[in-house]
Image (cartoon, rainbow, N blue to C red):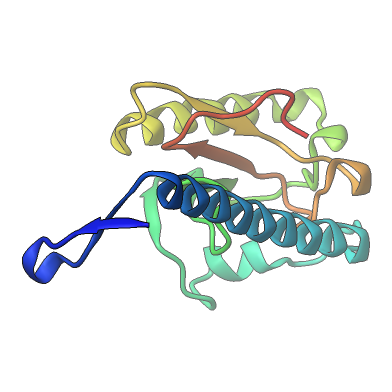
Length: 165
């Protein structure tokens, strides 16, 4: 391993050692993401679909703290507590109105569904995601939905992979 001294900044690695560190860092990041996905999958499988109050209702009512990035009379957007990207924001309607998931949507929900997506666009711009972002709506146990209050995930700040799941 070669290094050069750079004062108080410490050594700078060059050559094969740098490649090994990059590979190890990649493996650690992948393992962390896989563990996070596993816990999300477990939460989704444990969640019971219902119209009962959810953690999101508690966030709307300010019973649970959150980092709000956008709010108007219809929707609330806040940072996810277990981000899957540098920018990961949850966007929810303030009134659930039976809309526990996208598969429960009725024609009367068209306005709020459009509002959620338009809000995602506004928040993406506010967050500086000009290079692109991803919108995700999980639905049901196989869709990895863990909170039965429809919500949009806004993910950005890095290049997204395909296929997503």
